[in-house]
Length: 168
Image (cartoon, rainbow, N blue to C red; front, side):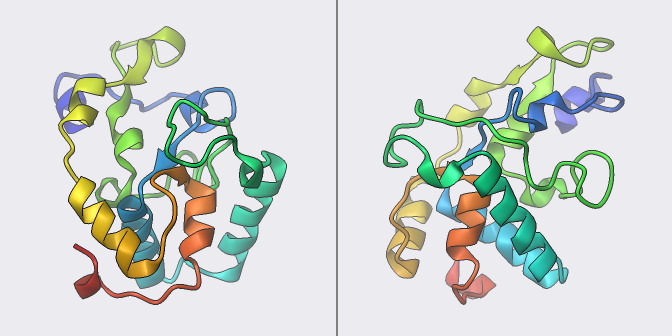
């Protein structure tokens, strides 16, 4: 995102289709979900209204009936992200805790902000090497999935207790 913005390409002024059921099938790793949940807890955002929104997203898009076993990334369901338009227009999450897929999905055109102009930088995503850290997180916290839709991942971890020092 930073690199694209430095070149004058940004998502500002976009309707955010990438965050809606029209284009979003974001799945996160256990490490990404734990880091996001830590942020939400530290900022008093992991509250009952957010939990209710997560549950509603899961119910609306039947994310608890997702195909596959979490190991086959090609089996995905689309859904509108729980955080899209939650407290403000767009996504309220800072870049430091956004899932990698959100960070890598950008417009690649200065004026046109949707459709074929927006896509993931797959080369950038391929450089991420957090397999060992995810394996440690899964073992330590009894997580059974490799990737999960963001709402189901957060709900799965919601009642687990952990702190920054426990996460690789």
